Length: 485
Image 1 (cartoon, rainbow, N blue to C red):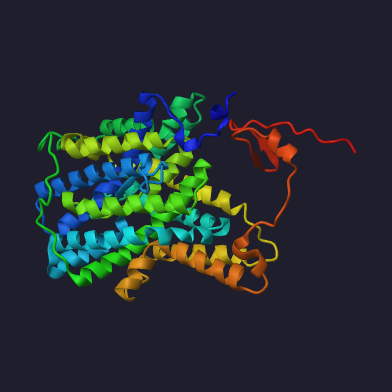
Image 2: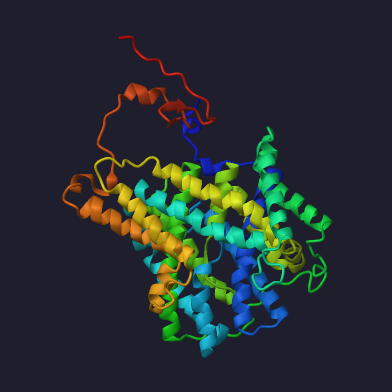
């Protein structure tokens, strides 16, 4: 075997067939589609746009989300984490952008604030990426678990119908549709055919939609309305304007976005089983900020990694970044062909909700698995986990808890993910770095050990230790010869 072939390849660099790549990529698009169209829908309504204008706004978000996803997954020098991360318009800035719109600035002021704040974010990305040293398992486990838990209310709203103003929100038919889809996911996940079990989410969404049509809970009447092809027009909503107050408030949003994207990069790196260092995080954050700075040109907003797709990677086991690249291509096509976007948009929310229960729960399960690696003996790690999870869940359990707080505070801590991340980082610093007892064990690092080189020579690419046993990359136990005493 040549040295070139002996070099270990990264799990995320796996290449699948074209059919499988685009099949799994479409699964990623369906998983995040509801999330990516919601922000432009909300902001468009706040701005008083017509239905046709909101359609243009949504198409722009799909188009730029696709380009940002391709940049993030393929990567170019200094830009892109080269991880299976789907990019799209972040929910983190909806409230702030809505405030800018309603305070008289309109969409041009939003676009100007996004451009300036994103450029600043691009400049500070390398410095921000250094927080990797503050993310030992006790922190990453909390953040990954919180990502999953904060997404579960989204699945619940989808299962109830998606629109809380609709008369049938929470109707038994919606819940039935969600749980039928959930059941299909579980059944297909047990099918002993790799292609079927890995595509269980996509197949369940398709079968769930068919079941919805049978019981009269799906409407495709709007599919034929509007243009078939449309290219996003630069500055379709006017040239950007720049207001200091809007820029400052949007910069706070950018800091939250950087925190959440860092958490998502760490989470997907943990799930994929690949090395994530500060350089890789910095490249991912630069891709985030560059796409965010360019987005207003095409009439859309800040871009960030979608946490729900991290769950899809965990549940399917498909780690290839090129699968997500294919999803980015699908998003670009949807942005250029609004008719296809309307087809995907006709998928009933309860169907997405049923699939989302498994997806988002799997993210939380991945976080719990990471927390299981933490040493809780003779330290404050249990308190760090308990307090950080509790703080992260506060805005989920009581969404209005910070309504009376200043806007800057609300922007940061209204997100359960950023709340938990900030709390876990600060508590880890306090108890495991600044505290005199654990000063030598800063950041909960493992004690220094030595392993005989002969043991390392016996290991092969993909081998790992699970529950005290050595397993190969396929999950099969490797027999360990124990010397006789």
